[in-house]
Image 1: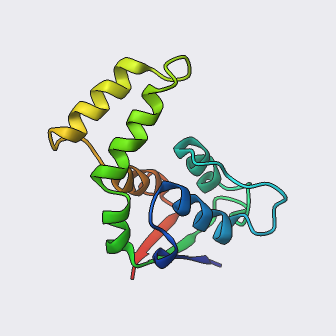
Image 2 (image 1 turned 135 degrees about the vertical axis):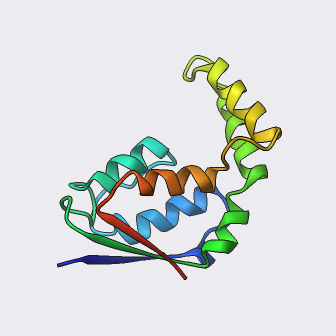
Image 3 (image 1 turned 90 degrees about the horizontal axis):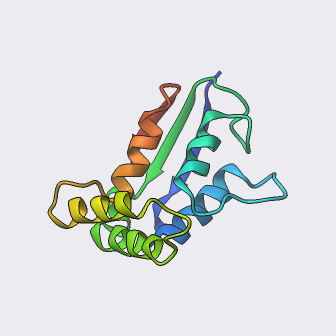
Length: 130
């Protein structure tokens, strides 16, 4: 049996609201929520946390996905990287600077594209844009 979940992109305008939507969809029955972390998102998609209980088939419907491509695009990604640079003790500064430079010269992924890659790394998840 396939579990089906729907992300409503109308609720997403930036990284924070993206995680609010992820928590609404996947963490509603938990007494804690995911923070804005790609690692946490990846862990959640592995299953066993929140609504995804195992590694069985999952259908993920993403409404307004193209809107969110812009919402989580270059400008939001730039702010994401610059925010990390404000805490050099927590992050690999050289890697963040390299990622930022690649983003700015058009060769690096946006936050949206990184999220898509996280999802793609889970072969049990079928993503359906709407």
